[in-house]
Length: 328
Image (tube, rainbow, N blue to C red):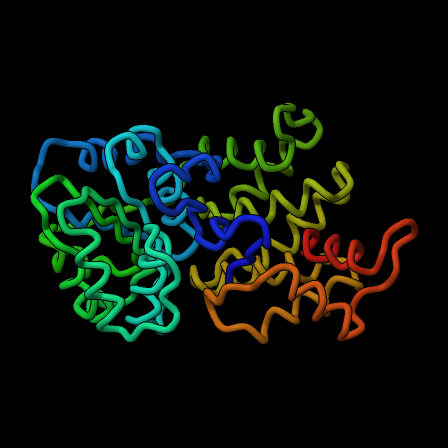
């Protein structure tokens, strides 16, 4: 799911950028441990090859594929090299019409809500023909999703590029690549660096917390999502050995689980540590389907109408609901 502000539609995409000229709305996201891969793929994207290329980024859930793709997307090198940009999120239950609609809307062709799948594709092909475009297709689960839309993205022979993020390494061969750009787990140094940035920002970790902090980081097993979630929790907790020790004990119980199960349990820890008044609001997101766009103003009204929001001194009910959404 994606939250959309009423001021800028651009935040509805993971990258936060639409057509050329709107890159100022996007922000680079902190990324640790993948600099070499970032430079490697930027070289391919901005290289001299005239043929349209599809570049896969492969890795398990939570490894940082979307974050890497986002930083590629907003890179000045990329923004200077292409004339048209779009980001589409595909996911397991893909919808070809929705893929085309997202791209159609972002490249500056106006709303395509009332168009059929073929009309969207036809309009898109004609618009992209002769233009140098850069498109990200995030979270592709099977080749059928690409097969349904591939004919609407012209080759052009002008250096256009499509970046695909996927959990499935065998998809890379379908894009004329023997293997994708495979993201690995962070090593202990990159893991600690990411943890410290998340918890302390520009400050250094206090010496009395280093030992327990490194045990916590080791328990995350190099998975950026786990480090970021645990770090986010600790940034709001007491900075004491006792408080951090409780986190380390809870984390040690999930270390030996399978990767996906371990990641889910760590996310559950995040939910479990929410204040009581925020838990119903967080669970309310379960009514939305994966990657559905959610307008913030409507969400605030819904949360207020459902009675989930309690008054906060000095704030209107709408302001209190907005604070709830931010804190979730």
